[in-house]
Image (cartoon, rainbow, N blue to C red):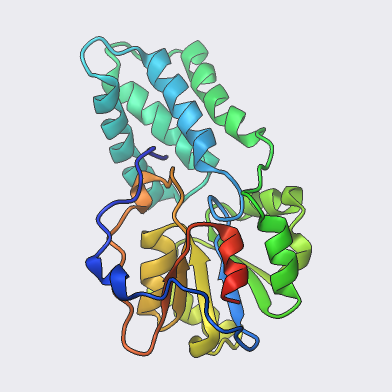
Amino acid sequence: MQDACPIVARRQSYNRLVKEPLSPLPPQTLLFDADDTLWENNIYFERAIAAFISYLDHRVHTPEEVREHLNTCEHATIAKYGYGLASFCRSLIDCFEQLSAEPITPEKHARIVAFTESIATSEIELLPAVESTLRSLAERHRLLMVTKGNHEEQVDKLERSGLREFFSAIEVLPEKNNSAYRELAARHSCDPSSTWMIGNSPRSDINPALAAGLNAVFIPHDFTWVLEHETVDTPPVGQRLLELKAFADLMRHF
């Protein structure tokens, strides 16, 4: 469900965004994305997809064309079934069936399922300085994890990550859009002026949070899922948007 393309097409307005350290802020509410913000995620999907494309070994379509078709399949399955490994597995099977000249056999089906299972059994690899940074931030601010996807899968990853103690609440949303952020802010009594959404996805973390009246911190990841790519919006008047190179840079601002 992912593509190894860097985020592109950021607006020139970034030139006027705050990139230098701010004076320490009073207690804030910090909302943290999980996948590819706290820990590696997309790289495991990339490996599974590469193995799938190699296994398909299509005689007509190039690997790039197969990948594009898989992206199309993922759009359809997510719209119908939501996020998560089961949805990803459906996408692989649909892609195989639509591009293969022969029907899928039980043996081939099991092989495709195994590509998905390889993701489920992957160890949680925290991104650099995540644990130490969260530990320090939690002493001064209120931290919430705000992710999307399959609830059971996301909670399981959090428990295995060893980061659960730093968050006062966990939100696993079916989708991250401006209405979801507004509802979340109301549910947790967040003051928009002192609430920040922190993540790597323009589509799910940054733009909808800004549209909901919150501030945002954009920390790009080299392998953000292609379906999360989007031009980063200019923050509305009165709101703030930071772009940081690394997670540890949060310490210079909060």
